[in-house]
Length: 524
Image (cartoon, rainbow, N blue to C red; front, side, top):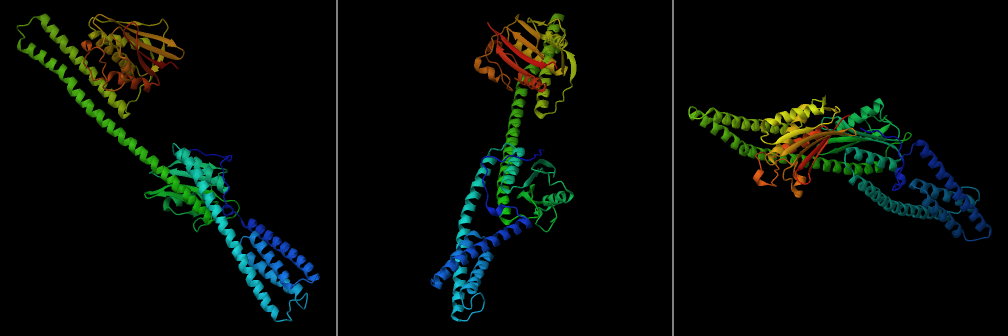
């Protein structure tokens, strides 16, 4: 959740027409007084010019045209038919008062003037209405252009949003700039909890009445607050963000003074809400697609794992069963040395199955996110010693030794998992290096990192396979003659364990031949 204070208008801000202005009663009164002052000034000017024409004995029709010109000029400056009607009435009265007998009196001696007044009134009022209509139509065209420009800018910015936080921030800022008001946008999850909230300007939305109005909008899906029947005394007007499934969020606009929101403003907000809903639906659809793809991938991995398990378990199990059956059927005929060899083979296969099952269980736990690290401060060399001791049981003719510094390097890790990483790396080195070769486990400090290395002198890894070695079920096929059994989960599991400890693991070829796997754990 994020709350912002006053923002700085951006360079792309477009002025929205005068109907978007949030005007209170004082502003309306000021505007009316301004129009009245303009009307008085224009009528005085028309009267002064008409007096000049009257003194030089010009035709009365010219005086009538002067007043009609004044009506047209005021109608162009005014913004309503009431002002135009007032100008027409004033022009007729002034013409009657100053330029018809008896002068300086509203009485009319000549009945013909009645028709003159009537025609003057009709012509003046019709022409003023046509002027205002043309002006309004021109204003509507400009307004539509400004609407389109504003919506284009907002839509362009909203297309670039990456998450809900950016969505509410950009939307609130854009509405605030165009209404010159404080704006609040908050989104809800399916449980009705607020997941994102953004406020521009002052927080005028935290009062008890405004909180109730906002909650009512979320519950009912109908606008509430300032200018509505429900919670009309609130500081802000609240509009729901909703789709076919229900309310997704609420937009609040804190109006200045005592003014109420205008229909044009509501229409503009509804257009913005439509864009917000489209983006939310798009993000929801993308999330669902990712979940579906992830589930499909998990299902494929499970299927591959089951096939690999059934394939890789068959060989050692068949070996165990065959050796046990042979030893049972020929127990009296075979020597003790042969029995020991049988038992050793059975133990090796069973030990390999045990490690394979352990790798499978750990891999599934990491995939499901069910692994909880038991972090304790441990000596790194003790973890290495335990791993080498475990591997030496089936190392055969391979020589495994450690290169450990004199200083004690302490790391905060899950010792069992880190030991399993080293065991997996050593098993890979044993499986993919010739009999009698050396395998070295090194440890050293580099800044705040404890660096672990496992190096063998096997055939190495093909360059195009280096990027795939940490993928599940991948096998190194560099030398098929020394290829060993396995599901290809060892390095994938190592990568998951190291990354869970905020470390990093990498593999490279060692010159002149061999492979070196390196990973680090932070010491602090």
